[in-house]
Amino acid sequence: MNFILLKPAEFTKFANNSPYKSFLQTTEIATLREKNGWTSYYFGVEENKRIIAAAMAVAKPTFLGKSIFSVPGGPLMDYENKELVNFFFKNLKNYTKSHNGYLLHIEPYYKLIERDKNGEIEKNGFNHKRTQKYLKEIGFLEVEPENPKYHFVLNLKNLNEKELFLSFKQNTRNLINRTAKKDVKVRELKREELTSFKNITESTSERRHFSDKTLYYYETMYDLFSKKNQVKFIVAEIPGQKPNKKTPIAAAMFMTYGDEVIYLFSGSDEKYMKEYNAQYAIQWYMIKYAINNKFQTYNFYGIQGLPDPKKPGYGIYRFKKGFGAKYGKVVELIGAYELPVNLFFYSLHQLLSKFKNIKKGKYVQ
Image (cartoon, rainbow, N blue to C red; front, side, top):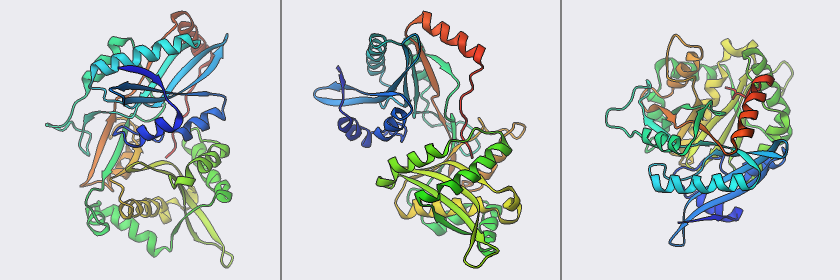
């Protein structure tokens, strides 16, 4: 095996065909990070003149010229292959160290344990827990993820609209039908309309105590991914008081990357939530889009840990499960890990983080 630097096009070609691909492991996300002061790198492992693993990494100086290296949504590789895992991370660590890095952060888009719709472990499902052992043997420390560790996912394989709709819980079907009777219309937003999207997500984040993204973030994501039709900003509207004037009452952002549609961020106008239930209309609109465009998976994205009626956030899971009463499941990812590369600077980083009470951004739904 050889550890190599890849050109962006070489990385993209590998990533597009990887079973572990994630929109976070793209040249577009690298560009987004670069706009915020990060430097991007592309690494690969080659065997018999064939790339068998790859990673898009970004680095940014924090203090005294020392940098954090981060691999969002990756690396892309078979984590069951211990030899490959050891080889790749040994070389990534050496590269990080030789380029003034003191910390290597990873958050692979890699499934840990197969679970059912209730979060229970499937009896004969896959179990990749040994991969966590491999990482810890290398020296990785498990940390709080920047992105949700638990997702609720809907399997769309070989399904049509009617069959899937009938699989929803009765209450979910009723609320979708109610949005149609209430004349809730759903459409895709243009770039110049993203201010109205931001207004909805911002008011929602204030109400529910989430950290919203900036308008610049939403506009940049549109610029980077819309060319390949890999991002969609969706709004639900009702007739306004003036003729031909619509009132936006809910909105959501979706990634349409690889073989899945991902429900990433959303918000709703509180004044209209109980009467119109517009998020149901948005979800059904995008689920139909996913089916008609041959996507295999509809990812409702984050839930607050494993389902527990006694814990905060259970309502989010219950809402998503309504669409997945038959074909849904809980997906648990492997999590996030940090590899201390320079112990002195890593310890200093930990100390400063505690003093500054640094809080990581949360996703909004």
